[in-house]
Image (cartoon, rainbow, N blue to C red; front, side, top):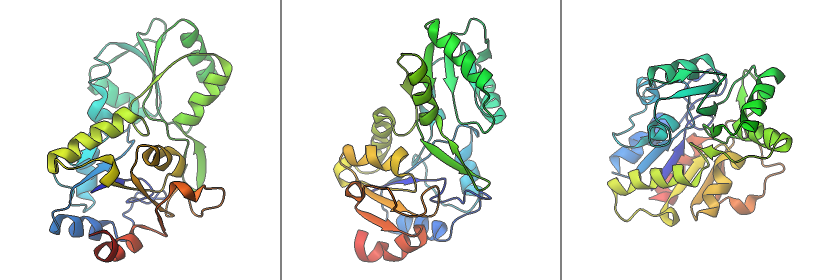
Length: 256
């Protein structure tokens, strides 16, 4: 049974093309009737599953989870202050949320390449007023166009250093998100537990550490934000592969 990350694992950080071995992985898992759930912190595309399928990934129904899939259980349409990409803001509008940066009911923070210190100042001002704070995920770092950007998790730590507050996390690596993924997995196989599930990801800090703490087996691929094991505590890992291609080649030998 598997949880499978997307960015840097199935899709290239440079041009969003499929990483070699990605198509073959799903062909193999599907032919073996293996249970799996694709997990992503996508907060830009409301129909990201359709995008992945158009890329050629044969992801079966009810085997996909992103923050938007669970967001309705966390916050109903209301007045919000949202910080993130234009695609993220447009998605929130499509979901019925209204933007209000003076008297919002909630503050939402997602990944963005062009945050300014004025943005952070406005976030701090809202936090000081007691506005409910929601981090769309808690990724520590992400890669784009050859550069590494601080992820939402790093931004939240910066804000916490400036002002004390509590916040809720929607996507990975929140326990609630992993528990929802497990629920989807159990719809395929009632015997699914964290202890018999393998998470494959390129994100050591953002995905795999929490997964290991929950009892999952962890597989790191070096095809995304992590290109080597320097500075990584390999005690949190059960296996390391250059990419999903090498994992797929060994699937029938080691993981059936």
